[in-house]
Image 1 (cartoon, rainbow, N blue to C red):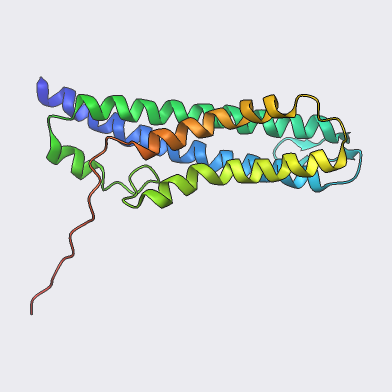
Image 2 (tube, one colour):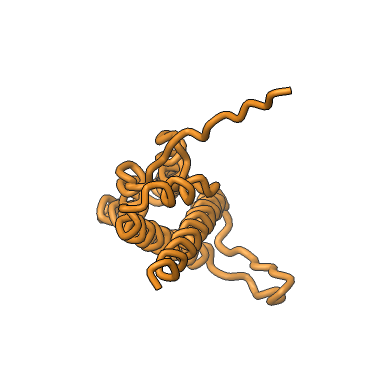
Length: 180
């Protein structure tokens, strides 16, 4: 029975690593879409999705709000998946060899170089901040911008902190020598 519980934890760990990476990548895409919408100087934009169909022109500010909302929600979901990864890791901490084996799963969270992990969490923040700066340059109303930026940064700063102090046992993979 104990073996079955460990197998379930290992599968859950791999799944949360997949979810974290997909949420983070989609968060990066949402921040890029927000940045591109801030570069758009028109008052409306069109949404043409072949699956859904074409929609009438929508207000550019509404489109920016939607992309920022998606960016924030995806950041929160990525942070939640990463926090679940940490909890599962702590439950399996007594089995170092299993954790080392699972940590070879190719993911941003299992990357051995901390700069790569940190950069992946920092990239959506940088792109979103560039979009906010562009938005500030186009709009002189800056009354509550610091609070808005802090709220938008919160989920991704949490991700960076969790990635920085990850409890996964990350080791460089051993080089294989083939003898002839």
